Length: 135
Image (cartoon, rainbow, N blue to C red; front, side, top):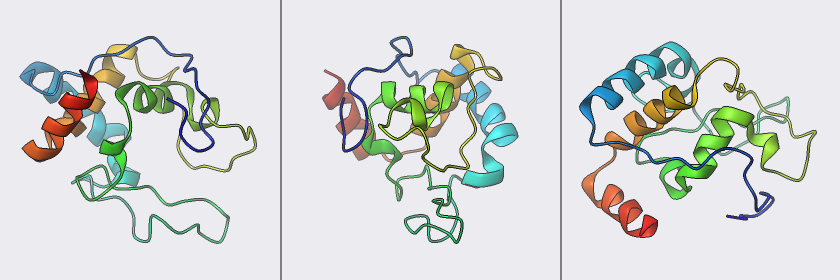
């Protein structure tokens, strides 16, 4: 799972997203609106210029729709970023980010629900590509 500056071993438990489970996706949509939409957008559109660091050196929140890069990352990495924070995966503990750590706020199941909701919104072609990569 090592990608660029990301560490090879996640600390979080193995996860399996459930983007086809209506109850899970519905729960994830509610949690997303409560915790994520303020930065990542009500419609998963992210913040403007999300690839460019702002004046404080931090990256704006990326989109989670198909125009962003979220779908490029493995499920485990996405889960770990939400649960333990991005600094748990990179070699720089001083990395500046606005992304909160949700491990003490959301349960593992709620994190899976949010990620399942996000994946459920992606076009079939992207979802198929991800499903193939999981096999």
